[in-house]
Length: 352
Image (cartoon, rainbow, N blue to C red; front, top):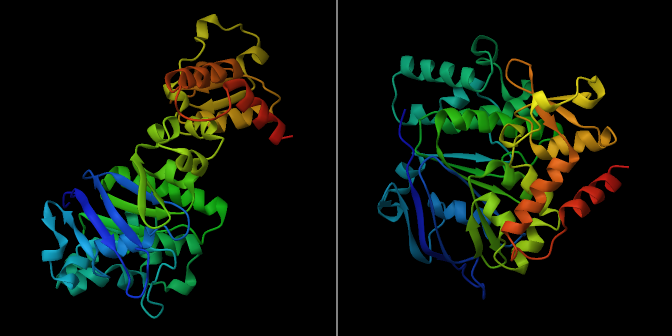
């Protein structure tokens, strides 16, 4: 498997002919090899333009872009694009080619032997949890939207690129399948560890998917570049604070799983079943999801289960309130936001 490559943008600007304002202005940030960087911002902030500059679909006005320490401006564009996976919202599968033929597009262009291509298609279909024997000869019209999107990801991975660009890849999928595809991609990324630049307009998706987030303001200016937790805890300015939302305390809870929470120990819990929590949640559950379920159950505590299904500890609303209070105390300059009790009370009211 090819190693992921570091991506660096150095003062990149793009001004289209006849336009007074630039689409991208002085954009600089570095994506470490193997990280997912999410570009997010309002319409007109240049998110898709940035992707198209990286793979040289359009020329830069100024600045430089380095992939693996080498300027992409020194590369022949067609050759460069064959080394960069690209996934778009519309998927773009060729309708008159089978799933296998679609995935094999770039390896064929690179002149791979047909046996190597066949093996790679099989490997990728298994990686995205589609049965090669069943799916290889199907056509895109015979697939669900979620299946087509997974095939699009497999096609982008086919030549084992060091970098993947993803332009709102799940934007056209319904919310339930969108969440499943996000989870599947994160599972896949944990295996392949590609450097990924992922565009979305949805801050919740950015927080879930990104190791790092670049928030762009109108005109393609970088407002903040940091980890999701740091952006939620320390927004750089009022624009960032407003963009991530007044509920950023709750959004922070989505970044923490129950496995990371200091729970009430089992040996301190009463043996009454109701006290141990009628809700039984796996330790991989996010604190935000746990809070939602607990409020639906009128604030009942939840038993947290280990990998063997045994009770690891007890989660209560008081513990979650304390978590939010501790984070607020650590970030006194994070901008306006609700306190811990207020956040939970507002959530409870919103769910009734």
